[in-house]
Image 1 (cartoon, rainbow over the protein chains, first blue to last red):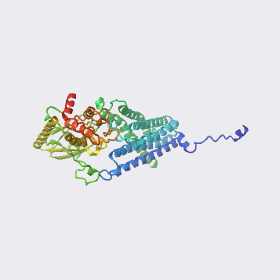
Image 2 (cartoon, rainbow over the protein chains, first blue to last red):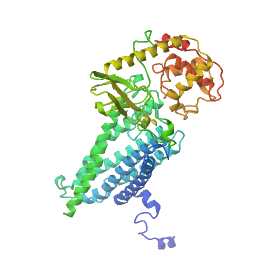
Image 3 (tube, chains in turn green, red):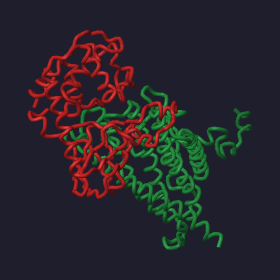
Length: 278
Length: 244
């Protein structure tokens, strides 16, 4: 016993885990921000390769490299990956890095959830990308997936796409709740709302919008799931539904997402940057 | 098919550009992927009302010279109008992603003087009358197969493929399996009424009874399917009439 006590050091539990587990288990907002940014970069390259396939095929008129079925899979996957896998995680990564530092907080308000929000994404996108290897091919109906092309006429892999969108939505909602909680509760003394940097303001508003609209997207894809697998007719006029309903529900999500999330975050990055420089 | 074949004019407008052009096997023509076999013919100087719908997925009817771009939505009818001053050929395209053949479904509208329009109308009505008469006659196997092959190329092969193999599982193969070698009544029924909840649409409004009879007969006896039976157009007509 005495030997054990002599060899005991009080300091060896401190610091992050070593190697891979540091990144898997991290609750540090900068580590998680870095993970988001690397994930975004990898997705950017993946979606970019698909864009290259598209542009190479369109380099001259006629069919030369890929068949129309695969071409549509490329456009669809490119759009989904760039929107949900590259643009959105890039801004969440910046938010993770910058928001706590800009408002004088030691970390995000909900660090464990922050870790979970990120680690859902690799699973969601693995599932989405796995559809490329499924019978009938990947989703081929465009990133706006209008019914009934995305329901009655879709390949069977659409069910995996729906579940992947659900996961992305969960990740996005948890990330947004985290930002709201951080900004509202963890500002340093003296950091009033009117003194808060523009980037933080943008993210506060964006986070509220995301919490409001991501469930609507989840509703849209769940209605698709019901139409495809459980005999409902939300988007099928033959059963009393309306294909245009899908478009309204989709753009209730898509309009705030593209305009206020992507553009506002981008322009506030630019204006913050120029403020610091001037 | 209505009792008075001259009441309305029906036609299907299909891409005229030969596959050789888009597979780069022959030089591309002037109106590459912008030409059809049956243009929509309208008279000039009159207000034309277009009623637009679809029977599978959402398309969009876009003819820029008319300032018309209207979604064609299955189960709903949209309308648009135009007054065309100049006779001529006006071209457009489908502008809502509708699947793999989205780039292969152009629109051609031919605006002509009133007199020419009436001539065209009379010709179309005469054709409709002929179809009406052919439905009543007894067709031979060879006639059905010949017509069936053309109808298949026009209406079926974009999904079920030229070799009948389809793209399973969304578009099943017709070769050596399923309804194409099963009971003929069920086979006719799926072509006439479609299959709800699947990509198979109802063709009763698009194809005339002779065409349906021909294509059913063709599918049962092509690509090594050797069922050997055939269906007469009048039987299909009776089926459709009884359902109406």
